[in-house]
Image (cartoon, rainbow, N blue to C red):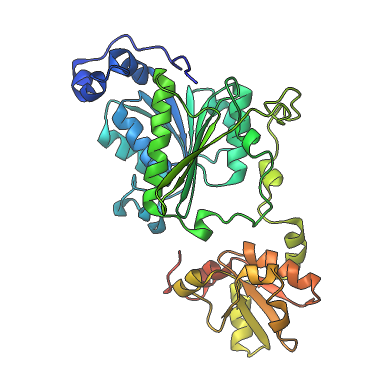
Length: 392
């Protein structure tokens, strides 16, 4: 599907800009006109993390005139494996500030606008309204649905990307010309069903593969060239080195862009997606202990069985002393219940407390009424009890 250019061209390119972008200018499909459109473009990148890093760097190099960055987090050492816009010296620094410095180091001609705040329903419309195109680098479902709905309501196109372990996806959503994200995923997955990158991991270089595809699509939309990924989902398997495409049709019954939309204004996206299921929330109420409480139980020789519900590779990195590994799926399948001791209190833990809460709900329904889980998980344990141990 060929689409008209998203922005008008700037009046001119300076001598410095002609020299800098000369390899673009000699491409017939881009040329002076296309580069002037890039110069005049205003693109917002949501997130300066795994996908935002290559996206921002290559958009800056390409000469996108104004780059906005929405980011509220700080640089952490675990980010550096994939978030190449940040460096060792940036640890502890605002990700937005760090990203801006790198972008300006790549191309000082780019105007960088920072939005150092969490993207939420009460600010997204004002922020998005300032830009021609959105590049979505988010890593959670609540923000993805927020980005989609705001883009539809404002009639803004956006380039979407997703990464997990060795798998990546990318598409362009623009309700005026094709489907939106809700046409592809009408409902979020059940809480705890799809692990985040923080739980499941991601191959660092996968971010570059998907992020560069996002920039490629952004350039095509801005300059009005090529065939954008509107109505197509690109799926990349890095292990098998395979790309495939799936057609995505506009859903006439879509809740936000359909013929009779039911979502006509922004909603509570945390509630819509749910970080933890209602069953897990109910199970954890009154059955959550702190790492310090667990330490007191261990030191007092309380009759407890500490069970770690993470995956084996996570358990190898760091674990609470005396804990036994039984992955979450073993409980969901029912295989682990018969091996649980009846004469000791079960204490569950995971990385941060989300998965252990889900398993706690299973145990409660199976009759283990006094079972508890550790709020904050092994990360909380390390931070409060054994700070010399690593976190991930």
